[in-house]
Amino acid sequence: MISFDVFKDGKRNALTMSYDDGTIYDIKLIEIFNKHGIKSTFHLNSGRFGVGRNISEKDIADLYKNHEISVHGVLHKSLAKLPLQNIIPEIFEDRKNLEKICGYPVRGMSFANGSYNKGVISALKFCGIEYARTTKATKAFELPEDFLEWHPTCHHNDAVEMGRKFLEQKRRQGKLLYVWGHSYEFNDNNNWDLIEEFCRMFAKEDDIWFATNIEIYDYITAQRNLKISADNSIVYNPSCQAVWFTVEGEIFKINGGETLHL
Image 1 (tube, rainbow, N blue to C red):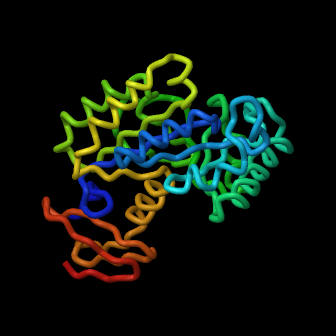
Image 2 (image 1 turned 90 degrees about the vertical axis):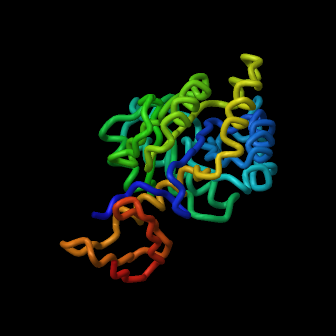
């Protein structure tokens, strides 16, 4: 029987990071991530570039080039408190502004101040948003049922503890550790050693896929969209990317557009 319990390149588990607001402390955080090969998504407010300790617009393209840029609202408004007519431009204008800088379609976001409701989620679909991260920690390693209400595993204050638990049970396949936070917290709390320790824990783990939020979304979406015959003997991949799965513990790869007879 086919199981969706492996990630890209047949890696057993995955790690993704998510940081909000786009402050100047992202510079140091990205240096740490790059040193250890960790990938992250950074959710930015395009209407606040260069204000206070927020990153300057001219620095964004180079700073985040090995990571993902994502929506966080033009002005960091609590979306659940806005009328619908103001929710859409807060999201859509941020998306348009960011795309002009990064040069690729921006399809994800995180909710500023963790604020959202059913009306906000409905509005996301009109804005071309395909995933949205909340601030509700699950303290678990499961994939989301609904990517438009994507709950992370934990805030980075709990990352070392949850990272140890994740590594202790890494023989269990198909698990995701999702950590979120703000880079300015490391500066304000004088605890950069926390994220350094966390990254060192994972740097030499060769069976964990380090990915951005959108990479996780795209892969899982392609995996879930595989077309499988009733007896599990034929698999068709309608997507454009390769997908891995297991059959009784054996790992199989199916390329985009391929039909595989097991």
